[in-house]
Image 1 (cartoon, rainbow, N blue to C red):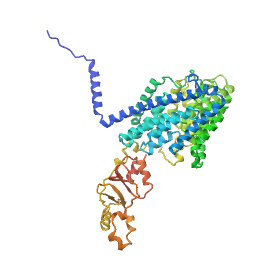
Image 2 (cartoon, one colour):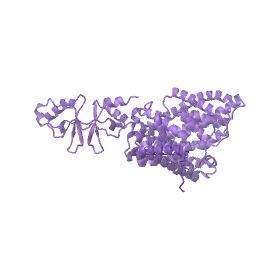
Image 3 (tube, rainbow, N blue to C red):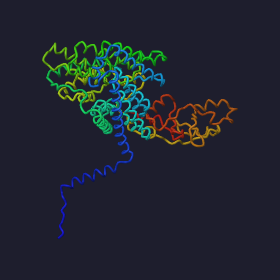
Image 4 (cartoon, rainbow, N blue to C red):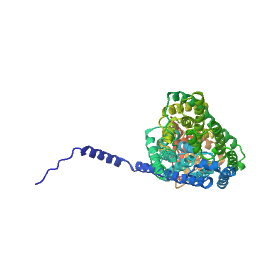
Length: 585
């Protein structure tokens, strides 16, 4: 006898959800699916790149400084004085040699260049240069350069995003976002800080916590961190005791935040002052600056071996309260001088990790002094942690990402309240004393302006979205009379464009340019378009961001600029007034 099967009511909600999810996925257009796949791919490449570069770092350190198990600083301290001097000199010689071979310096920490690429260059970065620079940076840090390893990882991640975005001809908005995803994924994989790195990408690189930017950044950081955790390690970068907050720590965090806000401004100013001084060195001597800077660092390392490398072991010692007060005071200032010297001389590397060194040791010094003045509170290691967060926030002007990065680096939640308070105050004081951050100050010196909020064109398709068709165009053989008639028929602000038989742009004819030929009445009959067109006007391309187009308009009195494709075929024009309307914040 047949039996009736009754539906199971409990499965209906699940089936409904599954159906809605399937319909949502099907509703995604191909371009959107491709972009999300690219975001995940950028995270994977950044994670793999971090693994490779960190393996190179450890191998090189082991080769020149001894056993990896003992730690980099232990190997340096155990080395004879001549090795502490000669190995950094070898690192400087390597950088100078590469500079001579490629014909251009490798100076800079890379983050400023990434910000410039995102905001004013439509996300364009050279992948070969980034890979070379990253490899040289990692080897130089392993040999003793007092810079951060994160510079190489951040730069290669960003360049991989740039390469994929432009290779697949994404719009400027998506290409820029891929660059930010790659850079943030590089930070995440370098330090196992997916949350802090995602917020770093939003707060420092993009300057916005907009929801449409949050998803891609998070996905790239998650993928990169997952790769790093599987292939390297899955634990906080600094393993420290659990520090407990006492009520007085909040009060002292206020004082520490104010003091380290001033110290952060000094850090930014010191980097910039030495860079400006070294920029005045004659060009023919520039390739040899890395060798000179690393020679001075090697000489200082004979007495202060803690200066060499990115300073991880010294920071860990400060967090554990194992450094004397003398070292806690002397080393930050010496590190600032050595880092500024190498960064300005052209040794590639990051400034993120040296700022942690600077802040941790100053915070540790503050903690030891407070133990004498007001005994009974948290140990100096707790103040070293607060100092790391305060200086990181003060130098980057990004307190939100700084707090979360320090929390993930140490895994200690006990001091989160004084950490937040100190980071906020340090940012406020530093910004008052030094309006530009560690990264934007580099761009400001080059007159590159970064908007203070997200412009509309961060999500626009750039020039292509504002393209207007050309009303009339003439061949280069058009007569003067024909040119005059057509030009007078053009609307206000429009010009006449000369193209060949295949539609390729040759030049622009403006009414003011034409007036210069009117006195030569006897020659007008023989004058043609090729004689009166402006061949020097640079057309724009559809892949340029509107900020780049605005910069072009700043150099010409014209109201419109021609837009051409990669083969110089005239596609249309773009108006100055349209760009200015779209560029309002």
